[in-house]
Image (cartoon, rainbow, N blue to C red; front, side, top):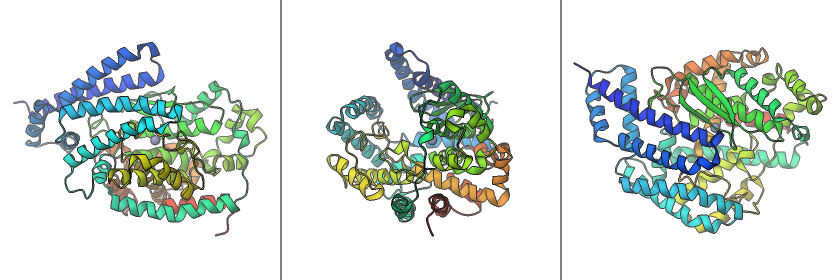
Length: 498
Ligand code: ZN
C-alpha cells in the first residue's frame, strides 16, 4: 500500500514547481526581460500565483498533510511536513478575498511609492500606507495566538525566536554603545581618505572581479550565476540553481561588497542539503540567519585586512591607475570609512544598525497605534537627528527611501541588525576552533565555508536561529560580540582612546 506521505510529497512537488516558476519570472523581470513584455508577464504571474495559493490553501493538501503526519516518518519527512504546516498557519483565518485585496493593494502601493519618491510627496503614499497597516493589523489579529502584541505576530514570520521584549533589549544595548561611539568618531576621529574608490572603474573589470571574489569565497558557478540588476539580490530555484545579481557604479566598493554580500546568501542556499531542498524546510533558518551569512562575508571577514592580504595585488592589477599607488592599509581604511549618512543602503558598517533601530522603533509604534502615518515623516527626521546627527531635507532621503513598507512588510527590518549580531557571535565561536585570520591570509576560504555549511546551511529550517547559535556557540544569543567587534574595530581605525 502506498504511504500517505507519497501523496503529500507529490502535492508538495506541485507547490514547489509553481514557486520555482514564479521565482524565475521574478528573476527574469529584474535582469533580462524586455520591458515591453511587462504587462503580459504580470498576467502570467498573476495566474500562476493564483494557482499557487489555491493549491497551498486546498483541502486536498491539508488532508494529505494530516494523513502523512499520522504515519511513521523519517526525520526529514517530518521536518517537511512541519514546515508546510507552519506555512499554512500563516494563512489561518484570512479570507481569500481579503488576501487578494491585500495583494492588489501591495502592487498598487509600490507604484504609488515610486511616484511619491520621485515627486518627493509623502501625501501621495500616506493613504496607501494607512491601508497596508490596517490589513496587517487585521491579519495579525486573526493569526495572533500567545503573542503579547500584534507586532510580535509579524516578527514571527521573519524571526520566530524574537519578540518585542527581546528586541527592545537588543536594540537598547546597540544604542547605548553605538550612538556615543559614532558621535566620538564624528568629533574626535582622524580623517580617512576614500576618494580613490570613486572614479572610472570599467564595468567588465568590476564584473570579472565580482565573479572571481564570489568563487574565491566558495560560491559554486556550476550551480549558480551572477547577473546585473538595479538593486543587488539573491534568489534560488533549489540548491543547484542559485542566482545572484550585482550592480556596477563609479564607486568600486559598492560592487565589491554587494557581490560578497549576495554570494554569502548564495553559499547558504547552495549548502542546503539535497534531502531538504525544494520544500519549505529547505530554506534559510530565518531572515536574520540568512543575513548573518551575507554579512559574514561582506563585513565581518570581507572588510578585514587578513581577507585582502592575498587578494590586494590582484585588485591593484585590475585597476592600476586608481589603486596602483595605494597601500593595502590605505585600502582597508577606505573600505571601513565611517560616514554617517541618511540612506540606509549606502550606510557604513557602524551606522547601519542605527538605521535599523529607527525603522524598528517607528514600525513598532505604527503597529501599536501610538504613531499616526501623518506624524511619521517628522518622527523619522527627529530620530535621524538624534541618533545620526543628520536631518533629512527631502522625503526621498527620509521616510520614502525603503520599499519594504510599500510591499506591506512590517517586522522585516530587525532581521538586518540581528543578522550582523548573529554573524559576530558565530565568528567569535569560529575563532575558538580555528585560526580564522591565518586561513584568510592563506586563502583557505573553503575551510570557513565548510564549517558554516555543516553548522548552519545544510540544516535549512531544521533548527531555529536561536538553536543554531546555541549549538554552534555553546551559549544563547547575545549582542555582546557584535558590540565589542564594532567598538574595537572602529576605535582602533579612528585612533580613539578607550
Ligand atoms: Zn542581504
